[in-house]
Picture 1 (cartoon, rainbow, N blue to C red):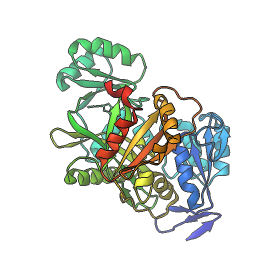
Picture 2: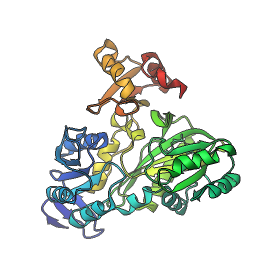
Picture 3: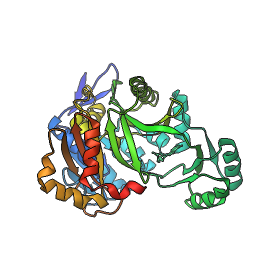
Picture 4: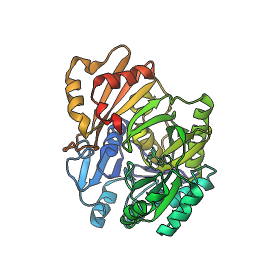
Length: 399
Ligand code: AMP
């Protein structure tokens, strides 16, 4: 084992160990970077975020370089100030990623970003890993969309291959008369398009897998995810699916992480179909909203696990300590939640213990993720009742 500063290179497998005391650079300054920094600090790591907005969620708890993500001088500065670099969003500029890889240590690499930035590349890689995805077709014209819809049937979902998130860049086609409208709306984005058959699912689940730079793999218990208006509303853990399906989902996520050669976290979103099969919807090579429940409910949080994985530390135990429901706090919920935090209900009851996480964002816009609450409980039904009774989340019921 040779040692250079804080960086130890293990001759056997070339995995570098980034020792506690080192500095981790984060491309992006949002809530994921913030929670990563808050989880890495007790392990002795320092953080520098690169983000165009000063005093954002991450900048409030770390050092920061205020510059555009595409600013190559700023990227070089980040490389000079840090021992390892990670990112907290997927749409990292390819040239900046290449520059950082050349000048610094980016254990996650840029290959996985290239794959997951594009739905068609992602689906091909998932199929190569042995996963099942919903039947799909690439679409480059209205005539192709019409032909693909005949083959895949209705309902199907037309999606942009790049740039979509939180249900944006999607059009559910329920009837062939909608072909022109769907094509006009999504082709106007200029992005490539993909048509996917609509999976009739019993529920949506996700698994956060972690793979360290030395190849160790670990998975967190699957979360059952409830979306409203295309945005994650709540995650329920344990997911209410048969034990065999939970085990299968964890195994599938681990296989995908290994097949992709992932380092760090890989969030795998799946549909649990009415036919009893698991269909992978999409993957994200970063901490994920549906893994926030791990912060108090697991022995190791997804954020600590990510830091351990990219630094080459042994992975922490992912065991679930208690059932939990995570509920997101969007802009429209913030006032209610802040009032609740000041009320006697803030500490919860013997049945439900709320743990509040606010991200420190300046502006509370509708649909913007402002925080989340982890509701620790003995029975997830008590936590779901708590959400109903709080009277803060009703307005979106009609979505
Ligand atoms: P995505 O941006 O791909 O994660 O899609 C957002 C949400 O739309 C998913 O969480 C599902 O609720 C729904 N959805 C997307 N694609 C499909 C599909 N092929 N079948 C059924 N529901 C889908």
